[in-house]
Image (tube, rainbow, N blue to C red):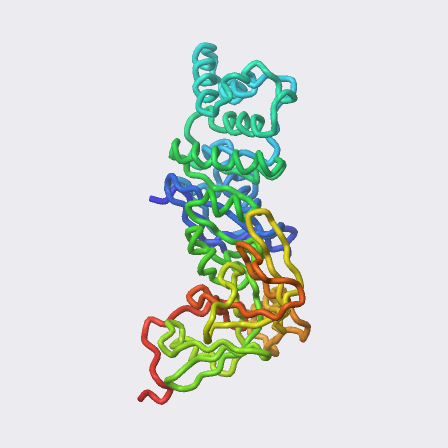
Length: 410
């Protein structure tokens, strides 16, 4: 039985602002589910709906098999950790940890102290029990906040709302690994909100990518990164970002598929797994996504999977280099694609957007620049299996479950 179920849940503010749109989601017991997306996508609203701090406009919410639409927050067995620990500054760490037990009616001082000591040891803050919050580091404060949330026992679900967002990068990187390890060691069902893709990729069992209150994609971290369901997800995941450009699909029956960028082309063999599906897009614009790591300096010899451009810049990041190429490609504007998707859902007639005519930098990740230098004309090979193709509305074009046949059926 799933620990958390949201069944067609929507939340509308002031009668017109739709923050969450018919969300259906299941969270398995012991799963660490990460809600990821830009500001305003509905992540925190979903957390507040699960906690009972907001009332759903429509839909049902279940916790451990119980319908909780009308159950108040204090009776939902929810633990919540916020971005700022919200610790009482005048109380010691011990007193902060003990406070939830005391307000719940626990009067046995020895039992309270035992429970505080147990949680403090688990979170590695047992040496800080006599200090006040003002004397703690950011990471220590978040451990105390997490301890206070868990002190009363295992919750039905632990909700974490960007708990590391206010910490510096070095501390955040270390603490996220500790938190993920602790959550898994305790077997806690957890919904974790972040806008940081690195947190999501490194911590999650599954990632839910949200946009405008709706799910764009959901899956294991590697699947969401390697095979994003939409162009938006592909663009949101990854640093440096994916190259998203417009192209047109042309088929030569039974022989090849041409991805035409206007100024240059890629030729895909008819045996390519996506050739069958791409027959439906003959003559139509598509969005092509190429991650910088899927491009590499061209080796000797001809290749059908090769692009050309002039180096406009080289950037050094310590562990890698990033090259920018002027390849004369047309950038895909995802905001415009989003507007066209909305029109598609509403049934409006729209003119397909083909991008503007300015060039876009083609990003290439390098271990070392070698003989590359600004101003030089170079070629790059494309790792074909990692080439992402989306339709004109930003939806992923998957490989067909059937082999591509010539268009006339012969």
